Structure formats: structure tokens, C-alpha cells
Image 1 (tube, rainbow, N blue to C red):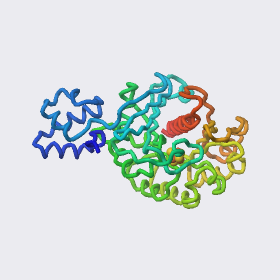
Image 2: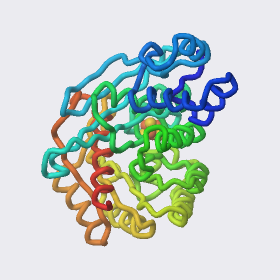
Image 3: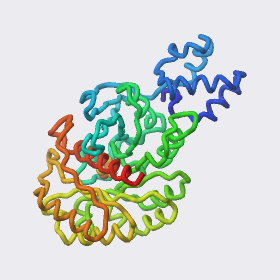
Image 4: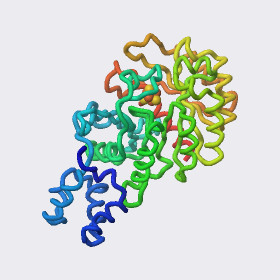
Length: 362
Ligand code: SF4
């Protein structure tokens, strides 16, 4: 294993390490400034540290955990960054600029879709990340470094994070929580917790544990079915934690948090788009005081599923709205990186829908 990366080290641990070697306390502030504000990637950049001190640090730590490998997309469009990890694996992050369609005027706001694992064990049927199975969890540095790297590479400030890239974030909860402490910390990125959304396939024990976390993080559930029978066709996790268990955990979440839940629902023709499902979904959403983010399906290579006609999607949405549920349905056409990558489009549209709803709440 390589030495730990500073982008995963809590400020208090860095201060302790420096103190134990006889360095004055202000050095911690200087190093944190290089890492989190100036986004340094090499020791040589830290010009206010002596060469001897940089050598001492370099023997114990790496600066960051990711090596940028590739960027797809361009300024003002969705950009996908591919990063190489120390063991030769890769993860991706997707930077999504605010859409003029959302804000009605140009905006420089950005949302980053962050990965939490290499591969995924949960095998949701619409998702390519699960196809090759699970490889390993990302450590806190590999999570936080996605944000630092995206901000550096795109020269922007990331305003919102959605944990909806590769992996099931709640299956890597310890590292996720450690990275969230770093992301929201006063000496690090200072992102407000309400700008962080965790999207989960519905891991019941972890939802309960996350509900205990003091920060007002947002939660989105990949629901995609309003009955166990329908959901199981799309989400194998439903066999382990069926809707009743999931909704009980979400009731508990609501008892502990002020942020509204989001139910994500990919509309797939002939699979989960019956209007009876809409009526049941409305009932669930009302019970959970949740918003619904409807995402018309995009083709994924190797799957025969299709998106329903636009008129049908609108009828599905109307049933929710008539029941008093806030339901977003968007047919964004722009900013594809790769039109063949339906999965990326799904994530992009899910993320945009989440941010749009959160902005309405703000
Ligand atoms: S949607 Fe998320 S939980 Fe489901 S297989 Fe893909 S990465 Fe895993």
C-alpha cells in the first residue's frame, strides 16, 4: 500500500502528526491551505515549507490519491473525468453545469456526481456499474479528491455533490462519513451538508445509521417500483429489504432530519410505467413527505428496455401532481458526452432533477 493521502486525513490528525515531530502549530494551517484551497498536487508547490519539511512529509504521505487520466466533454457542457487509483483501477466523476433550462439565465453553478466504490455489488438492472460486480471501496481520500480534482481541472467551484456515481455509497458508509466530515469541515472545503445528496438503492440498516448522523445531508432513494413485484424486476436489493422495511427506515429518517426525501423513479416502458404504479407511488410519496424525480429511461447497451412515449410520462407525472406530490419530469436533450451511454444520461438527469428540486426548496 502507498502512504496515506493528505486529502483523506482529518485536520486534527495532521496537526497531531506535526506536533509529534516538533513542528509549530501554524504549519498545519499552511498545509491545509495548500491542499484544500490552492489544490496543490505536488510537494514542490508548497513553497512556504522548507525543503527538509517537504521531504519529511513526502516520506509519510502522498499529496492526493487520484491521477487524472482523461476528460470527456468541454467547458459549459457536462464533463466526465476518469481517474486512475494507486492499484491501477479507475473511477469517474461527472461535472454537471447548471442548465439554463433550470435557472432561466446563465449560471456558473456546478454539481459533481461522485463515485464511492470501484464496481458495485447491487446489480440494479438499469446500471452498467454493477455489471462487472464489486471490486473495492474507495477510501476517504479517493472520494474527496474527486471534488478537488474536478475543481482544479475545470477551474470552477463545485456547489452541489450527488453521491450517485459508481458504487452504492451506503455500502461504504464509514469511508463516506469520513469524507463528508472532510468535505463539510471549516478548514477544508466548507460545503454545506444540505448541498450533499446521497443516492441509495435502499440499504435499510445503513439508512437508519445515516439518520443518526448530525449533519442535514439529503437522501434520494432509487425506488423505480411502487410494489415489491415491480421493484424486484429492476432492483435486486428489494429481495433483501422489501418496500415495507425500506419505508419504515425512511419514516425513521424523517423523524431525525428536516430535509425532504427524494424518490427517484426511472420510467421504463411496460416494466414500471403503469398508471396504477403512479397512483401507488403518489401514496408512498405522501406518506414519506417525499418529492419524486421521474427520469425517462435511456437505452443502455445490452438491455432491451425502452423509454415510454412522452405523453405517457406526462400522464404518469400528472397522477402524482393531482395527488399533491411534487414530481419533476424532464426531457433534457442537451449536453450529452456520449449519446450511446444511456447510463450516464440517466445519472446526469437524476442529478439535475435533484438539484432543481433542492433549489426550489431553498
Ligand atoms: S445504481 Fe448504484 S447501487 Fe445500483 S448497481 Fe448502479 S451503482 Fe450499484
